[in-house]
Length: 327
Length: 248
Image 1: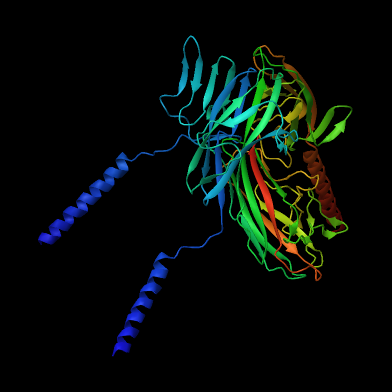
Image 2: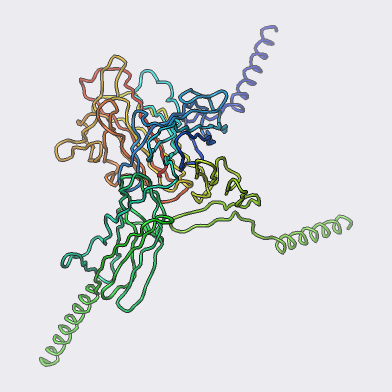
């Protein structure tokens, strides 16, 4: 009897634990990291000897994670706006955190959904040479622990926010722009500059601006298309920073997806000679730069199609005429 | 009878409320503004935003975000936040799985595993994600699986050029990309590249990049390892450093 009661109790306990397992068991998912940072870009014009504090917010939307924030300098990698972060810190700018309980390169823990404010102090020592200094505030997550016995690749995720610092004593900056390239691509080249396209072709245009100065610049302006009948279309240039001693592909709006990065894609039915010009300014009292190019568009495909249709029609008519003569 | 009358009253009341709902219903939407180039998720609707000035300073701000706005004071001017970046969407980077298991590696049988990279680039517009390995896949004792050269000969891949890797006798460790904003040379699921190695004079390689504003740029990275018969048994591991940065 006692044995029977024990068995019953054991069964009830087992049943309870079985139910408990199904009610409270969670889904086991892969370890995920999801970080966000705000603001993603900071532009600062500052005098030597001054310091400012900027508040950043880092948020964790993934699994609980240990994060570390650090500052590294960067340089432009290409003319498309990509960057190359340098391995070691360099430059005269001094960075620190004003947080009471946190320093740069000191790990901190963030639960899922939590965020951390980073009070970044940027200090320019007296005597800092005038010019531009570019840095990235990187916040990186520690990789997970390794799993024994299997091959695995663990990921260390980092998110960055760029800091563009212009150091100037007087407040004035050096603006030395130059249009490095303003040309349509593709088509047939006639002579030195003139390009020929089919009337139905999409015509991609590239505008690359070079900054020869020691401070970053931001172009504003437009690209104008003029036809041989006086028609005119204007496209506004999208202002983007061009870092010192670098080039950047400048885009205009409305732009379109193309197989490679371009400034503008002209589409429509073009017939005749067209002239493209651009006029760019870089803020008050700055030089204005101009560039122009031309292209010729003719309906080659339409003409070839018409010729083919005419030839086929003539051949068909001749064949029918011959058949009628034989009859 | 009483029940029938009550039911009819309920139906009339429900019909009345239903009609009222459709008459008085109006769309409530966030202020979305977009062009092919830019998308503003939510415009600034705060009455506190705007320009302020006194004899000593000029302040133009948009509240709701830390460090937002342009301010000038003696000696510096700061520009940050959505007033300049046309958006309130934070720059976000996610990796779906940061512990990618290739399982037990068997000679001449390639092992693959995937992870998904997601970028919400809204605030920044343009972005890039780079990757670099902290050394080759290797055991604690230093035995390494070399980085892949893909099938070799005409199909030899490099850190910047993906080539076909479908031979079971071509050994190494590499990755394939598929999805949004990936390098054009990953033209098929058989195209692989080796990771650049940070212990050699190699730079991180761009695995995702875009010049377009968007909320959900997503790409799948497939890791692949294939070992030869003479590869020593062990737990082969490495760390891949992913860095997501907005443009400037």
